[in-house]
Image 1 (cartoon, helix red, strand yellow):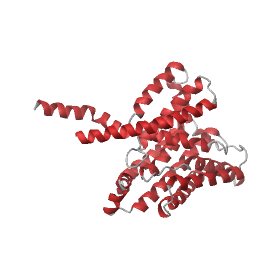
Image 2: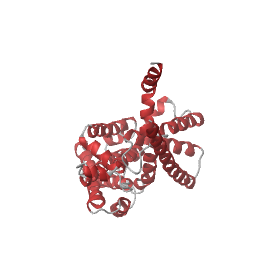
Image 3: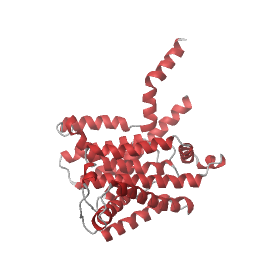
Image 4: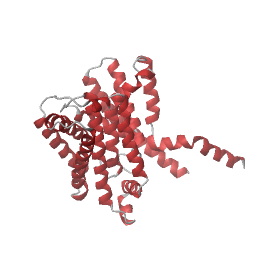
Length: 329
C-alpha cells in the first residue's frame, strides 16, 4: 500500500511539472536562468514597474512564435518561414493603405483586415503545401520572397503614423492581442479539429487510415498560422508606430527558434502555444542580456544562429527522453 501511496503522491504533487516538461521541454529552465541573469546585470530594467514596457517590446516576437506553431504542429516539415514577411506586409498595408490613403483608423476595420489578410496568405501557403504538395519550406520561401518584394515596392522606406488606439497596444496593453490569440487557441483545442491536427502531425498515414481528412487539417493549420500572423503584425505595428519594410523579416528565424526552444516538435504532433511563448520570452531575454553588454549586431546574429542550433538539439533530446519515459512507463 505504501508503494501505491508514494506513486499517487508523486503523480499528484509533480503532475503539473511532468505536464510542463512534456509541453515546454527545457524552455522554462532557460527562462528562469536567463531571467536571473537579466535581473542581476540590469535590475532597473527588469523591476516590476517596467514589466509593462517589457511585455510591449517582447509582444511581436511572442506573436510571431505563436503564429508559427499551428503549421509546425501539422507535421510534414510544416515550417512556415513567411510569417515574418507577412507581418511586414500587413504592417505596410495597414499604415500606407488603410490609414494614410483611405483615412481608415477604426479598429473595427483595421483588426479584421489584418487577420483576414493573414488568413488569405496562409490559405495560399496551405494550397501550395497541402494541395499541390510542394515541400512546405520551399512553398513558404516563395511566399517569403514575394511578400518582401511587394512590401519594398509599395513601401521603399519607413513612413507614416498609426492611430492612438493602435499605438497604445505597444505597451502593457499588448497583453490584449496576446490574450486574444490564446483564447482562440483554447477554443480550437475544444474542437475535434485539434485532435485531428495532433494526430496528423504525429503520424499522417495512421490518421488517414483512421478517416481523418489529412489535407484539409493541414490546410487549415496554415490558415490559422496566417490569421495569428495578422495579430502579430498589429503588435509589431503598435510597437514601431509606423510602417517599416525591413523589420518584419527579422522575426522569421527568431520565431522558429522560439518554437523549438519551447518544446514544440519540428516534426509535428507535439507541443503548444504556451511552450512557443516561453521560447520567445527566452530569446527576448537573451537579446536583452546581449544588448546590455553593447555587443554588435553581428554578434547578435551569431547568437541567434547558436540559439537555433541549440533549440533543435534540445528538442531532439527532449523527444528522446520522452520516448524513454514512455518505454519505461
